[in-house]
Length: 94
Image (cartoon, rainbow, N blue to C red):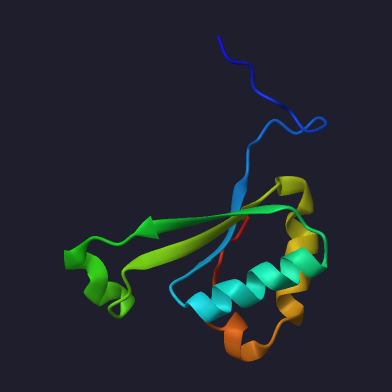
């Protein structure tokens, strides 16, 4: 039986910080989080062919998740990135 590794008292219950279909906005967000030393995970979800019209033709969504204890710090970092990229992010309301 495999054991799960834990980092401190955190058990791995990441929450979604934001999502986007724009790769430049996603990369800018990732770089801002890296510069602020905030740990995160980045996943991509494929959009089914018949739902792509809802997402302006995009074929995947980038989802960035973080530790719930670092959420407010990550939101402050996102508020500081360029407005052009920030308006292309869909922020969660945790």
